[in-house]
Amino acid sequence: MKTASGTTLITNGQLIDGTGKAPIANATLILRDGRIVYAGPAVGAPKLPLGTTKLDARGGTIMPGLVEAHFHATYFNITALEDLDIKYPVEYVSLLSSVNTRLALECGYTAARSGGCLFNVDVWLKKAIEEDLIAGPRLAASGREICSAGGLMDWNPEFRKIGMEGLVFVINGVEEARKAVRALVKDGIEWVKTYPTGDAASPDVNDHHTLCMTFEEMHAVVATAHNHKLKVTGHCRATQGIKNALLAGYDSIEHGTFMDDEALDLLLARDVPCVPALFFEKMSIERGREFGLSQRVIDGHQETLDGGSASALRILRAGGRLGMGGDYGFGWNPHGDYARELTFFVKHVGLTPLEVITCATKTGAEIMGRGDEFGTLETGKLADVLLIEGDVTADITILEDRRKFLAVMQGGIIKAGQLAQPFPTVVKWH
Ligand SMILES: [Zn+2]
Image (cartoon, helix red, strand yellow):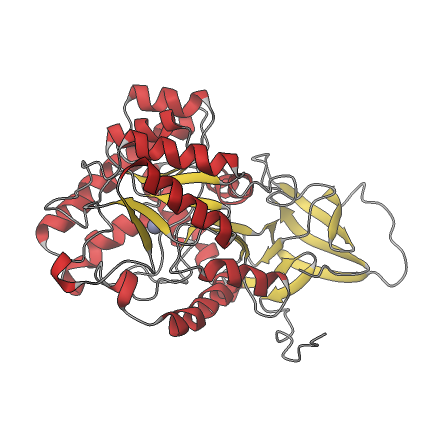
C-alpha cells in the first residue's frame, strides 16, 4: 500500500493516541512520508519546512484508525445458516466483498482481521487492497474455516450431496485436521479459524453449550499451524470449548462467552486476546423475529449476550485484552454498522469510551500481529489516522456516523471522509 510523500501538519483537535493515555487537548500530529513524526501538545511541536500540507481538525478528535478484529468480508445479508455458503456463487461473492471492504474503510476501519471467509477471497482482497487497486482495510486473511463433522458448520443433510467446500473444511480426526491446515498454508492465509463450539443459532444439536471439535483435533490444528507460522483462533462459547482452545495453544479466542475462573486464568496466563462480538447477539434478539428466528434461538442469543457481556468485562478488569469486532454481514447486523459494537460496550458492558477505543485500535493491531506498525499514534508508526468532528470520549456514538469523519487516512493518504478526493479510478498497469 502506498504511503504519502512530504510533510503534513494536523492541528486544532484533541488527540487520543490509542494507548489508553488521557486525551491531549489542543494537540498537533505531524506526518512525514506516511509515518508519524510527532504526536503531542501543539506547544512543543517542532518547526516545519515550507510546503507542509496543513489539515484543520476543526476542534474535533484526532485518533488512530479503527481495527475490525472479526471481519467477514464475504457475508452479505445473511439470514439463515445456509446463506453463509450457497447463497451466491463465488464470482458474485468476490464482487460483494470488495464493496464491503470499501464500506469498512469509509467507516473509519483502516485495518481488519478476517474471522472466516468463503473460499480464499480475503487473501486476494488483501492483495488488491495492498496494491491500491481497491479501497479497504489492511487485512489479515483467514480463508476457509475448520469444523468437525456433525458440528455447527456441517448443516447440509447427507442426502442433498452438497459439500461445504466454499466455507469450511469438515474434518474427522487429527489427520484431517492437519490436512485442512496444510491446505490453508498453501492458500496463503494468516489466521486459521476453527469451530470448537456450537452457537445459539443451532439450538437442536449444536447449541452454545455443545462442543464441535475434540481437543485432539484442535491441538493438531495448532501444532500444524504454528509449525508454518500461522495463528489459530476459534468460535468459543461453551466453557469447556474455551478451556480446550486455551490448553491447545490458541492465539486468540472469538466470543469467549461462558468464562469460568479456570478459563479466565488460562486466558490471562498467556495474555490471549478475546474478541467478544456482542452487538451481533443484541441485534439477533432485537430484530430476529422480523427475520424469522424462532423464540428458542432468540432465547439462546439472550443467554449468549448476558454471558458474553459478563465475561468480556471480567477479562478487561482482570487485565486481559479485548478486540472489537462484530460478525457483521447478517440481515439484522449489516456491514457498515461496525462502530455500534463500540457503543454497545460503553452503554451496556461498562467500558469507558477511552477503554473501548484502545481495544478497537491498539489491541486490534496487536491481534493482527502488527502492533509495532499501526494501532496507536506514536512516533514511527504508519499514519493510519481518523479526523472526526466532535469529542468521541463524550459521545462514542459519533463513531457510528461516517458523515462526521473529516478524514480516514492510511499511511498519511486521505482515503475517505469529507476531505477525501475521489478514489483514483485510473490504474497504471505495469
Ligand atoms: Zn464470525
